[in-house]
Image 1 (cartoon, helix red, strand yellow):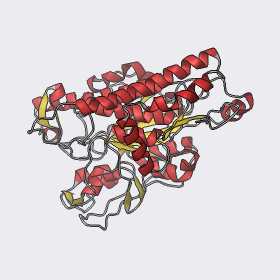
Image 2: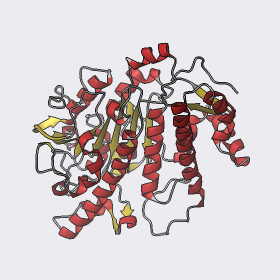
Image 3: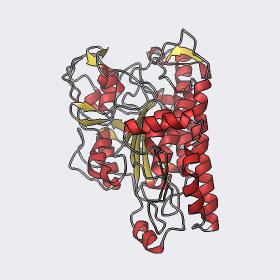
Length: 450
């Protein structure tokens, strides 16, 4: 076993038995390396999709500008409110039927990051557009081990009819690397962990993981010698930082291991749970959020997408005392009881977002500050109200500072029918991968920075 680079660099990697563990930034960097990297602190970009729209009265702040009020649904964001920009008024026109009839849920997932009208088909001739995350990945993905990271909590299907003549590929994916190629998501935290920190080909990684499990050892056991040698080269503060980082990795590993002991779910649960994942949906989301934070922290990737659930998901939320299916409730027809239950589901989702943002904010970055300072996290749905299935005034927010380019902590309202893709154009500019258009964009979104 050996440390890949000398002198110490941010690219330092600890190795052993199929483990390749990149390190976070530390002050013990060689001065020349630190000076070179300090001028180009990487920015990160993430997109999070939730299905079925939201109950807008409990989502939309009443006040514009700084110090906006946090409605009930957004209340979990109170500790990161200054890092959040709520954007009202954005539209995804290509999520509308535009002559194609029913199928709003499938269109909502397909259009979320592409801004393109999907071809209505349940066959192999699917067509959408290249998603904004993949636009960035194709331009800058070569800078990291993984061009992008695609995560989810429901496995979905890649074929068949899932929504009024639309292929399941539309409902199950938000990332598209070409007009005809959705990028499949990973739903098992154990597999994501192995891919992020495993060494070699996927087959070699699987074999090494099996060997480690047979020996009942943590992957950290196999890089311990490298870690001990590295400790001798670090300043005292960085030794503590390394210990904290490795302990964090081990804690995530333990939480993944505990999923093997989870009890079986009741037979009447009507949503799919991938094998090897937590039975607790909130813990599943949080583990995936941890995977994203670790990937950004170690510069494994700078681009990620995450589907909390597939389009049209009818998952129930018994953990918050909502036994009805989400999709069924979204067709509320003005019923106050259904509104209240929808608000609880929406707030549950935002609570998981808050967990991610707080983790990013607590993680130091290369230039000082936090990962959240250097990130842009776009969260929301491409359906506004689940009962109307409308695609204007979407529930969208942007978290993070974008490397100091976003004046966050505000509620802003844009002109009606402003394409959501204008936001994506502005994000690509800040990410360093500008393009002439994305989907149905008409320009950049003004107002993100005063």
